[in-house]
Structure formats: structure tokens, C-alpha cells
Length: 378
Image 1: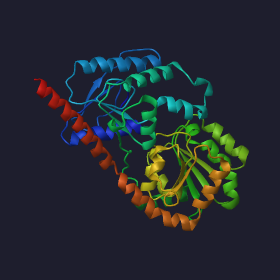
Image 2 (image 1 turned 60 degrees about the vertical axis):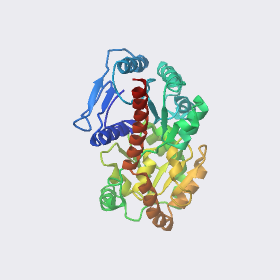
Image 3 (image 1 turned 135 degrees about the vertical axis):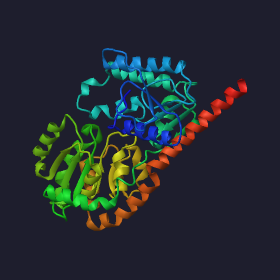
């Protein structure tokens, strides 16, 4: 529904549109709103009729997309949002039903489990994966692929796993000097262990249980510091939690910054004890920055982390003690020094260009098949 510079799916949309335009393809982004195009040749088809309420806006947009595509002459259509008209659908957020089951119980407003917007999203998703509605499906992790196969009986040979790519130039260990400057500005000594939590949606991403684990970590690593990068309207509640646990002096809330690569460079270990993330950009960005990662098996990107080599992958239901044990292990200076180069090497297998090229190849294959059929019929 929106083309923007902020957000995981929005980033994929912007980068992919630019990549395709640079390769000479004619790209149109169908949306309700947009910012500046990622490439001069990218066009927008804006479908924005006034509709009250989030649920009705979502439903109306899906309907408008259906009408728009019925009269358009595109070779191939890729869906990145909640619509049901497409040749290829990318499940960047995973199944909405799984999100409701796994993530929503840990969100701030528990009473909003089944809003009209949720019901609309579930129905749109059901239609999107109905037989005949798609030619191919892109999943950004094996976890999401398994979920789609289980929920909607999508034929396995029609699903291709293409992990989200990372900007290997922007996120790089050579940013360490800039990270040292940030540490100095925050009053953090060079040898203090620095943990980093990244992302909005603090509840879903597990900040609460990370704070619960800090007292045990601080018993072993009394100088450890936790940096929290991201914005969440519930931040005051987590600040109160840190104060109640007696760890407020060891936690620094940075808010949202335009230079996340510098914050990664200031850290020693990335921690994402998420309750559900279809992928989690933070994991691959941390690896690219040369940081080991402690996360859970409910993050799709945990599939990139080899336990004991690039960090630790805990069970989704892990408690504070299990988490703190992993944090103590991975804040050991010797362990950190050995993991840095391995983390970077792993990330280099998942550069953004490789990911975009794989999506481009899939789109061209689907478009080529459609054009061949059209020529045969003619």
C-alpha cells in the first residue's frame, strides 16, 4: 500500500524497483502513497480512493489493484503487500495467522487480537494463496516456506526461498572507528561488552525477556551495556521494567537513527530474542558488520547463523536463564574475537545484489512463460 524508505518490505520494494529499472525493465509501482522514485524511470500507479478505517482501506486497495490489473498490460506482476491479484507473491511477513498466534500475544495491546483489519488481512491472504491465483511464491526463509505449505497447501515446487539480502558496503567491519566514536560519546569504555538490540515492535522482538536476562548477565559481566536501537511507543514501559530490575544504568535507548551501521560498529554482540520474525534484517546486518548473533529459532534469519560459529540460536520459548547463559558465553572476549571474521564471511553469501538478481531471474522466467503462452494462442 505504501512506497517508503522505512520498513523491511518497503526497503525490498525500493531496492528491487531500482535494480530492475537499472537493468532496463519498465517498472510500475502500484500503491496508495509513495515518496521519491528509486530510479528516474520508475512510474507509479496511485490507487487512493478515500475510504474510512484501516480494514476498509486495505480491502479497497486489494479490490482496486484487481481492477487496475484487469485493464493493464504488464508482463508480470509481483505482490509485496496484502492483495490477491498477482503472478508472483512474496511472503515477506510470513502468514498473518502465524503472526497472530506467535507475535500478537507479546504485543502491547493484547485485547486487539482479532480486529477488523486482522480479519480483512486473513481473508485477503486466503484469496492470495488460493489455487490459480499465483504462478510462483517467494519466501524469505525456510521457516516461512514451511508455514505457507502448511497453511495453504501451496505446491512445494512453486515456492522459492530467497533470503533478504544485505548491503555489504554499508554494513561492514571497517566502520569500527566510527563505532568507537559513538562508544566514546555514550561514555562506554573500549573494553566494556556492548550488546545491541535492533528493531521496532519491542514486545514481539523480545526486548522484555532480554531485560529479564540482564541481571544474570551483569553478575558475570558487570560492565556490560545494552544499546536499544529503534522506536516503539511502548518504550516508557520497558524503561520502567529496566528500572524495576535494577539495570537501567546499563541500558541505553537510542531511538531510531539514520546511521544504524555505526551503531552495529559500536557493538560486540547482536541480541534478538524474538517471538516471531519472518526474517529479521538485524541478523544479517549484524553478521555483515562482523558481529555474532544470539537469536531464537522463531527468526527466519536464524537459518543463517551456525550455532557455535556465528552465535547461538535458542528455542523460541527460552527463558531469561537460558538467554543469559548464551549472553555470558558470547560476551567472552576470546569468543567475540574468533567470531567476527566468520560472521562477515557468512554475510557475504547474502549480499543484496545476489538476492535482487534471483528475484529478477524468477520474474523473467514467469514473464517469459506468460509471453510464450500468449504468442502460442495468437
